Image (cartoon, rainbow, N blue to C red; front, side):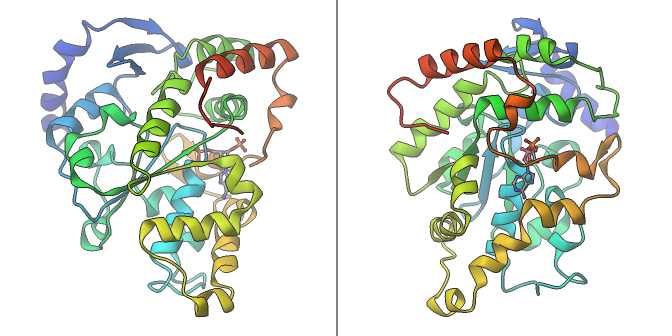
Length: 319
Ligand code: A3P
């Protein structure tokens, strides 16, 4: 299997090694492709994305969750899994996957369709649930053409940066290089992150969501935090799984909010590894809105605010 994979990837190597490249996150060489930076040689690589673009077949019933890393991917996976499967699993710790395992195991990344083994239940159940960090215009054509639904979640760029900082320094795999906040700030503000620049990623999804609101739902982490129950209802409607009056009366919405809460998931995931070098607990740190001010200087904050203001000018994106 690995041999096939490296043959597949070799096909793309000739191409992307000629793309513009610069050192970015973790000192990695990042490659610029269609306006975004990608790393190479792991599941979240430019090779994987190109292989997906060439081979992936979407189904019209699929649901995709798109985010940039550290924007609340784990949370939105848990919520969507819980909404869609609310009649399949009981809310008890012997059967409900969210009480046993990491939400990343419940909703796999699209990227593992190429580099890993997709859990069989993903293909056995309708709808298939996938998540991805791939920017909108780089998604496989079959996703764009299939008419399926997609949820995008973004988060205040300062909290994303600080979350990246703590997460990166918790990794213990071969990509691990300790970074200071100054070093990370430097590359982040230039957009030199996997799937960066942050701002362009958000802008693309925001644009298509305003053009196709029934296909693409645009959410922010901050709004979700402020009013989780109402957002969960909105999410369920959008996905075609609205709560009935009876379910609402029985407190089903609140049950899902609690099941997917930071506190609950952090407790479930306090031990074990998601994969080698990536502990389950690395996905649950503080879960706060505006926690960035413990790690960023006033100057860093000002620079990021200025970039955000300029890039999001005229768009109704607020955090
Ligand atoms: P912090 O590092 O600010 O605490 P991702 O899932 O995209 O990797 O993002 C991780 C961020 O989401 C972390 O932010 C993490 O604590 C937060 N998070 C994880 N699970 C959450 C949940 N159930 N509710 C709210 N925030 C959550």
